[in-house]
Image (tube, rainbow over the protein chains, first blue to last red):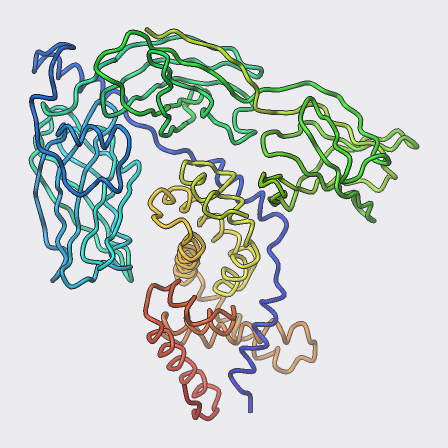
Length: 427
Length: 183
């Protein structure tokens, strides 16, 4: 008679021997590559500002500070920078709508903070019985709807207190239509099963925070492999958004994105808070960079393109017989170590280590005996290693499908983080 | 590898950081998916679905160090989605498997026997409730401890133990064995 535990053990052994197939990394990478983060519907916020100027009839000297005065309480742990400051000044609108989610849990929408870039909903979950543990950790407010408004959440943040009796959360959406007088927050609770619900509340579009700057930039910066065009800047004391398009063929080759674009106001760098890119039907990529909010008064705004992905042509030959892991190879000013060369029956594997900031391009191996060149087929086994001084290096193995006795590694060029140091005067 | 640092990067939309996090435990993810789906093709599909969901939802992950249990929960859900779809399509295939199992019992080919044993277990797990089958898979096929299973399934340890016990009991009845083990 068979014993169930023995059967399970046998199966376990089979499964324990399994290894992820080599094509996994490539499959995951291409699945991710097709994915872009959503960016806001710009026409809505433009409409919002036009409406505000027409309907409210206020100019740049409009004093928002005197208008409100109430602060949303208890959100200091999950907000920072401008968001905390505008709340401190009472620039949000208090809402105070609530609904029971189950026998003991209440959802309260405390308030909203809106400008031309985003609308942030502040909410609180309370359960006096202390049940806000894992079940409500997966509480997702995911959509905001209303008249001409249907916006998905762009990011959210929350914290549950020690006794599991209260959760404070904020969630960001694109700003609602200026004509929306009522908004509905849709949410989902994902625990054992998915439960959805919504809560409608009154919204006062005229209490949105006024922009201090809203203008076109329309300036283009040439990069090594294309160009970046900065289109507009919209800023309020709550947040700043710079938009534009980019057409740079090696943009995604190193994980730098647009973090090297600095916003400098009156000589001070405004901290970057995030950004997103989305490819459009024209083949260009639309981007958005987010910064902290701006003060009421200032005299100059500049965008500094400090660093951005660059390309260096090299055509460098490295003699593999002369290198080992102790020899630093200078590749266009960047450092590289060849750790291991394995010539197998079907392919040649070369393991290299380098800092994270650059990527090799057009890589070949060559055998001087036959004069044959073989191009890199794929790389595998990307791992990170911590050095004694605390810095990280990236180690990976390059695979070349050849059986030749190769002795030379040829590097055509590198994609790297380049210091461009270009300055755009916005105001 | 500094998981927290990478998760923070991934939260800002860094795809490479997310990929590194997954590749760091790639065999674990793959085995988990394989245990549910039983073949490479579907396991890779499930992992693709998972990384896309992770990318979209990682901004909502509050505790950076919970990344691995959170992402595996999502992988399990993706596997179940594939199983659900397969259920709609797979009746004919299932019948074929039963036939294969019958012939394999007589076969002396070791490789096939191993393969079919695996099928056998999967087939038997399918007779349990979803929660019981999950608990047995994670405990006995992936060798996870009760605590990790409880974390992954977001239920108390006692619940996991009881699911394992009830599941084993049912399986033993099916195999005609004795039910006499104490927990």
